[in-house]
Image (cartoon, rainbow, N blue to C red; front, side, top):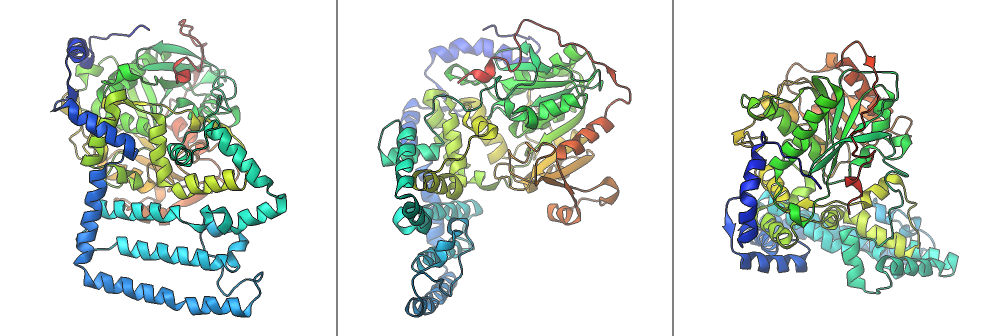
Length: 619
């Protein structure tokens, strides 16, 4: 495949000079691209990572040592735990008396615990109520024991608390068929058919390899051995009509065909995250954000990122900016023949867009962006710019853990989609691992596939260098928010951005917590319209008009405080609207566009193929 070369991009000059050196020397580079590390160290740590699933034993041990030494020096905390244990044990005589005074089939005096794993009515009956109650008491005891210990660092406290919950969840009575009243009832009602069906699911998922440790490992990794995706790009999803108008070694740029006679003059360019395939924003026709935009009269361009292989190991964040976002922006200006663009970024793509907007607003921008159109507005969809509170994903981010991830990626040159999925699965293991095992292998049920689930299974990889730089400079050191992040050797500052911004957070987001997304307010003086959508990181963004139970919250301009509002104060003052935020955003885009629409033009055929392009099919 031809690689486009642009001498205006310094990173390509540096790549050309260093490729042969990198091929001929046995050097390993850390995530800053400068420090060397001995290959033997990488080899050993790579093998350790294979045994631990990428987790750093040193990081885990340091967290437990920090907690253990400090709780040993905290007699007051120990007394608190002893009192709680005594209180819990005091509830048992009442529970035992219910066994003597009530028949087995009747409910005891204890009500069903408020935990989704124990929501089935049978958990309120003896002896299941005793098992669930003892489990929840143990959970409460661990929560108190692992938090609030004076002297323990916040990161180590979070790690110990998380690990203790993971270990306790393994022995939840809901995981065992002989202890789970829902599984027992289903077995009685179906004559054991549920267990037979569950066994068939197990064998299907394991391709007839009946190996319990491997099954659990695959569930954690998010793997399921299937022939093909339930929803195929170009056939069931990613169906909006368009053409590939540009291609280089990193991206394909898709321009979608207009669906109205007249269109807004300013095109919309979407920068999706390269952690995922772009078509989450172009799923089935009824819930495609792209189709919605073109139906409203917008000219839409979409970046489709290449799924990197081992040969792409040295691609870094600068490459994704230059050969990705800037290259696409230049082509959008040429294809649309317009000098201003509405730029949209989702997740990591939004973080990259914020970096680009800050770079374009700097005094050094003309050194490498003189040929680019102006970004008229910036829309960030569930995108963080400050990483001090990244949510539970921060559990996996410290110096030791990044060193282990570097070693894990060193041999293969990238981080696989399954490895990334495993981390997200662990963050919500109760629902995504243990409840899934119970549903599919004990109750014998499968969730009906849908386009979002199928997209989620279409995983991507991330290059070694880019992923390391992203974790180190953004997650670990928070360089972007603190003014240290460099673009072409010059630090960029978000407070240089004065372009109007539309920022979306989602209420149940474990990847980009909405309060973290909200921090863009303290990093720039740009006019910001902030909206909080219902749902999670993906489902909250895929929020098509007409979808039942969708809501969003926003604060109209005339009700906003003159000075900064904290996130919770904003939430208390915000207005809740029923329906999709898409319509609210589209009205915002229209208000920041030219008053006069122009005649829609047919997309130029450049001989690169039609949407969804070729990169989306790379496995």
